[in-house]
Length: 379
Image (cartoon, rainbow, N blue to C red; front, side, top):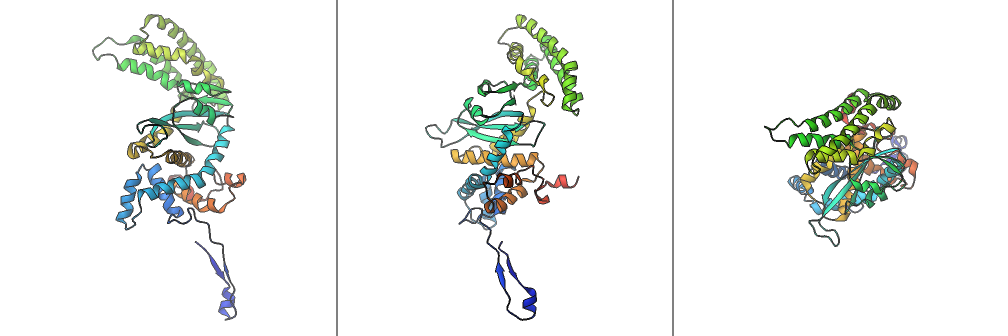
């Protein structure tokens, strides 16, 4: 939209009317039909609603707009690389300044990776803030699951890194790894389920599960308490349970088959013990990794619909877009209106001005009301 201004007083009195034309706003993708609204719509449909580009192509065709999925794909890449990537890197800088980060990864198929068959498995790594600080969720595409990926992404981070039991995170320097009690508990529930229905009650697995449930019961009581109180209460309530559990694990290890389900559950706890008890060190830490697993579900659901990325460039663009929309949702923004706002403003900003960029981040208090999710406005 380009505004044109004239003097109504001069026009009314039939004298010379000066006319001033405001500068034309820069296009989000010069030389294309892409407007901020249509670009935001297509991104939201794919990365929030899980609607593949080929189905959106047919929708637009039915409305009399013969736009191809290749055009849409190019728009996604250009929108992500040219504009959203600037916010992505700024969010990355903010993430590394915090004390606690959750990390996880999920698979992704990319068809045209150099020197790799189309059936190769690639990965989207996900990094997220904990209970403190602004909600930040970042995804990064990598060809492999090697520990070099989190090591590089978290290069300057020093703090607590909450993860599952994957050994690749051991390569990240200067961090304290925090384990996941949900994974530890799952080993005992799996052992119970693996027993035949008519078998004797699996006493050992049930005892192990009870220890885990006691820890989660303490956490439920402390959920809304301040971190410093949670820290003190964990030492009083959770540490005795952990001490008793460790003694039980060491004793039971001598009486179970290592490759049995209960043997694997016990071995997991013992191998991860220093990470499983690390949550006692800080009241801001969580007992499990469920925060991370919940956040990655949107990618898993979307992947079931669009199945794969065609190129590494497209995979990187998808990681950036997912980062923006998931962080927007976590900060209670409406993804479509937030994306539209970004594509209206970013092309006309000085992208080297970090202060100005901070005003565009999903947790900024200067964002317009139109970006806030409707359910938040009605509260």
